[in-house]
Image (cartoon, rainbow, N blue to C red; front, side, top):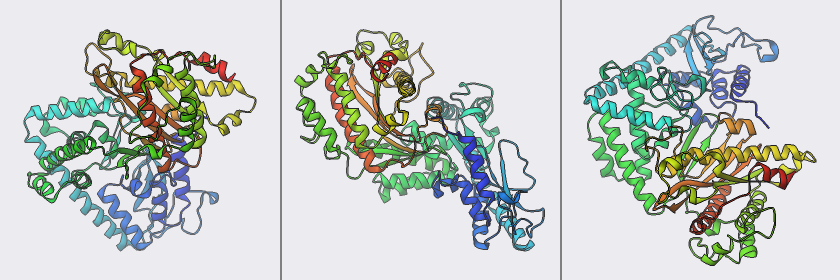
Length: 581
């Protein structure tokens, strides 16, 4: 089930782009990775000079002169070009970003040479040069303005900005952001930010280098990244930073984005006017960030439900809100009927699901099916079977801690909680009918796949646990944790970067984080529900709404069961061998 991997996708998109007749068509194929990213998002990776050049290519219908290629690579009558050896070339970077650069550009850093833009006249080429230079100067002036304003701040302010940004990127999923021609990433071999590949304080980190320099000596791109990243993080949650994955992060772009977001959150003309009068661009984006954070907090308190749409090919994540809010009416009829038939509980009764206390108690008793330890385990597995077919999933997963007693903050010291292993967590994985049939009589391979999914999800619970339990900053503690997820999300092309998704072919996915109140506090992301498809079609918004409604039902179930602290014994590797072998 392992997919081809991102490098192969980039090479394939570059090869197809070379076959296009016009430079603008080639640019669109490259920017979208042949349709894997929506066009607006793909083109948002372009710098100001590159955007202006693309506009000229479109206006003039400039052909693609071509990367030296064979006939079957799409040469033909354009492969000579009127502009000779001089001009601009299209490239596709190893990160999947379209780049438009003047010769010579070289082929380092995984660059794929797509071809030269064939301007119709030397005058058109000269005009393209002028326009690109004009936009380069404007972009540079914008960066210089912010860097100068940042340099005027007290030194402790820059130290705080570096600390906020460092803490966020260390504990986030992959970040990959552009400032002009520079890439800022904590993903894989190209990392220059701390994360999985670089530790905080590592010599190869841009942020480490900045910490040793006076602010006035920071490269302007680095100053822009740190200032804008800090504003993004302060505008909501640390995960905000992922909303600029695969995009340019610039002062003007940041300010415009925050203004739109503030308006989406119900910000008034007076709010926008107040932030506009805050002073220079750095003060304006800082003021907008605080306004956004306050408005967003109020909306969450008032019951607005946010979710995220993820474009996995370039890691771009966008926050949206459900309209109307998801509720019991979104629960698939098959799931509701299964619950009524098995437990007598009607989850669609009332505005919010609420599990009767007597039902929770009954679920702690031994299961009728001896393959399960308790009635809860049997019910959870049965529900996921129904969910898999109701929403057309290859697999459905529900994870969490095996026993809440292990996490009791009243009886266990934090050090004990932080030393729990992945085996102290479970993940029930249920294959859909079509997925099971794909394996035929090869039960061993099915067991291997399901066990692998389960092991990965057990790891995720462990990975999020310090944040879920409010122990991220406890010392001595663990640094290898991620922020616990709080928003549902729906992802396409999820099998491009995420190690587990690449390995197991998780192309389209839905995740619904589940938190409960336990140990005197709310514990975000302690549980979750996931649905996946290894191929097409992608999930629809209606599928996400149904999944969130199921998540609400599971939240009520987990909350009601928390008082009993019943241990989940099923769903380890031996269980999968017994059940499916």
